Length: 179
Image: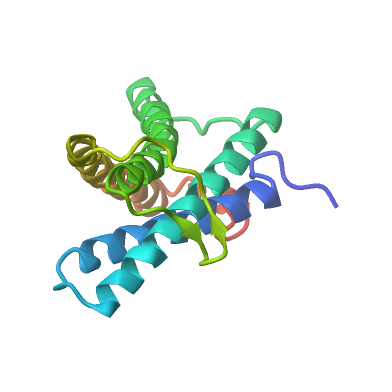
């Protein structure tokens, strides 16, 4: 069965929504865990957050590989400035899909807290243990994550604008409704 030419592939759709859920979840856990006092719950959430970050990094690599090897549907008709903003937003999203978890991994390594993915697979330290370097990567991770959150909000806002105002079936391209 062939997919409509104006719709993403099922694999692209699955990777999009899986990555979206993982990013929103990791951002939510990240915001919540930093507000907690030192406790077993906070330590558990930090581990979950790190595990999610590694999963996001792996999913991002798969998604980028898929995107580079599978042509997306043609752009919808829209003013040139909107197309440029959409392409810029997507490009920045991809950069931050990698930058946020890599900065978090570097922060964790520099702080001397290794990542053991799902408590089973120890990952190598990304950078040497260094208190000053940890402070830098903590800020990079934090502000890159905030930037990612803002871009995700802009992406969702743009999609809703297309759906509710333009009524151009944009959401159907990503699996929500008929194309």
